[in-house]
Image 1: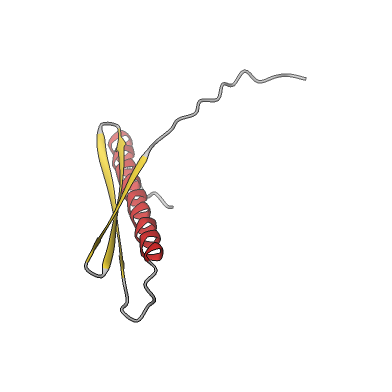
Image 2: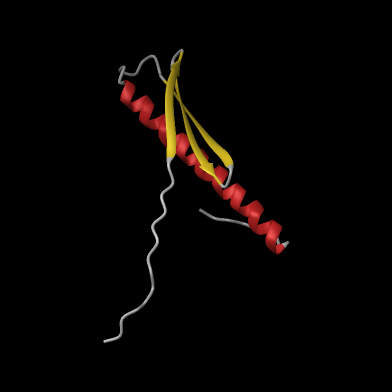
Length: 94
């Protein structure tokens, strides 16, 4: 049996999420330091006055939206980098 000499490398990226509340809405920011830049995603969840007051739901929705927005920011940055190196139109699908 042959063994592969491939070496595995683990990389860790840390995303910092902050949550705050402003009048009937919850705002989350997801930040990532990446290649000397800071990318930020923003998510908002609004409270419907007729809904029960369950703060965790607003927090989780706002965070999910912030992380999704952060992913969009990272895709846009990568598309720009790929275009700069290939000089070809870039369409990234996620």
